[in-house]
Picture 1 (tube, rainbow over the protein chains, first blue to last red):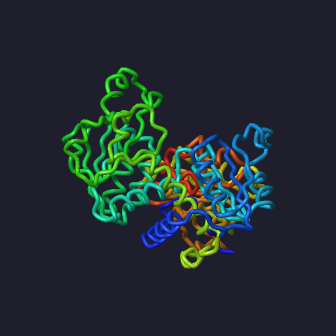
Picture 2: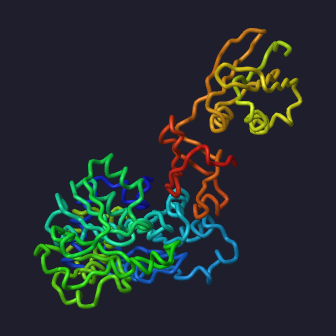
Amino acid sequence: MENRSLVTIAEHSKEKILYLLEMAREFEKKPNRRLLAEKVVATLFFEPSTRTRLSFETAANRLGARVIGFTDPKVTSSSKGETLKDTIMMVSNYADIIVMRHYLEGAARYASEIAPVPIVNAGDGANQHPSQTMLDLYSIYKTQGTLENLNIYLVGDLKYGRTVHSLLMAMRHFNPTFHFIAPDELKMPEEYKLYCKEHHIRYEEHTDFNENTIADADILYMTRVQRERFTDLMEYERVKDVYILHNKMLAKTRPNLRILHPLPRVNEIAYDVDDNPKAYYFQQAQNGLYARQAILCDVLGITLDEVKADTAR
Amino acid sequence: MAALENGTVIDHIPSEKLFTVVSLLDLQHETNNITIGNNFESKKLGKKGIVKIADRFFSEEEISRLAVVAPNIRLNIIRNYEVVEKKQVVLPDELKGIVKCNNPKCITNNEPMLTWFHVIDKEKGLLKCHYCEKEQQIDNIKLL
């Protein structure tokens, strides 16, 4: 059987990405369906991630599937020393698809090679988190009407931020211009700048973050600058308030600008931004539901045509 | 060194890598005649080591293990006192179960399984872990 697992977004072509976005749009029109009525979805969370888990479980429930799984590995046999392989093989006996979050990098790839059922990677350590990327792409597509030729500003922790790296790679098909705004300690790693050069993606780097630097942005993607990422705490104290977005900084921005954030936020977006119509991070999280419905269906072999043809209640 | 009737001569081993090559091929457990020489003069390497093993021929898998340690090693296959084949060791496109991933958070360091690397640049010796996707230099990497 063809392995339909979703491990990384990098494996998807431009056509496949657009196909999944169109499927997500169908689910936004009508989220409650019975397409997975006979299916059992397992959600295995070897590290806690409430937001991602709730989103996947809601997606499964709204498609009529039943959900099994665990939310905390302390209560499972992996705490007794069971290997990942044994856990995956055991759960494969029960479920039609496994959604897996793991603290180790490469865990999802390995699981997809050994499991008789498809695996959906819901985050493997600092490596990949493709459903987050799909919902980011869907949010951009929905708010801008296209993914082509956009100015995308990535702000905050660009060194460790897994979501910004995946987004950058997925956007390679769509001729973007990136602006990387980060303190020196957290700037975009060389390997991703090299990736941009290899794929002819334009980018500029900034350390300033103010109303002038972001005036031409179509998308402002904020991330959290975390204290524990700094080796030099003096440096952290110096920059921690620099990468905070305030409502007054949005005065000169484009009317189509939308502000994204993978959440949870701490203080990097001031609360006075929430009421600005350009703030989009809560809707973005909601888009995660539709993106994940599309992912579950696609991985289980349900096509866009079948989704469009599905009018049953 | 005595001439070989049948077997393999491993030549152009950098002197400091000689004993790594010996243990990599598990020669300490061979019962065949083996001649090991070191610190011979070499135009290319300065000093080199040579190993001659009677009645032993190596598989492609063993040869790719050698490539990880020293990419310029040469193998001469001897039959009836004649060199019948010369093999230059080359880094293969993939390394399975040969080297260890440097990333402690990689699944391969935490689960009983084979490691798997894609060689993405043979000249620069750049590898990418198939699982955690971290790129690493072959010089910094440990054999399993």
